[in-house]
Length: 336
Image (cartoon, rainbow, N blue to C red):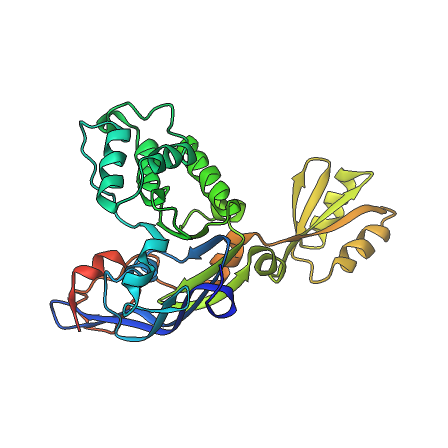
């Protein structure tokens, strides 16, 4: 993809959105958000419930009007130039309306005709989402995971360069989550840029190349997953010695937290790894392995979003205070 600045598929600068609730309270859903999504791969868009993820996505797609700031898709300002770029964008934000008694293939064929794409796009989309062997079955008999895959197939009919998915694994069982995760990874590797809004952090870490973390409508961190995790504090130290039992006693006597990890010990509480080495050596126990256990994406996320709203604030809060962190539900409130 070329023709847009710095290879960014999505870019927002100072993006702001506020509402007036029915009681007249001011609600800030997105607070001067600077978002940059590079071309290619899967970019995670993370935040607690009510942090402004869905509101941001709705603004990018022209479904909600921003109160301030700028947005662009493929370097084109939106919503002003949205009609010029929408052919390159696919999105699953709300559950699409399929005819329950029609097969998956027939539903997609009707959509293909409506958007003016050739029929072979139906076969390609069904193959991409792994439904080519189940496409003759009625939609109403599909599992929730299969329905979600069909929704994604519908967005792939026009071969988008950007795919926006808002919580695509909500309500799925572990097998369904794994299937959607593998499909998203494959799409990202195929050259499609995927913006994935999700709260399942273990899944995000497995599939995303980069992430943006927001809280209360503001950007808290952004960058490659590996960089964000490696920049995190050392969570603990993994230690291996010949006499695990004796080492456990020595380390706990120093007031550190010690847990078993196979034939090793995981130690928390030491300010420096050298302290562990010295404590063991003083008792004739010599370290075979000493490895820093760094924070995973979940621990980085929790550290960054500590104190952020975990649930959408109620616009009917009796104290009439300034509210932040509303999401899709707040889009039903009266805009300011």
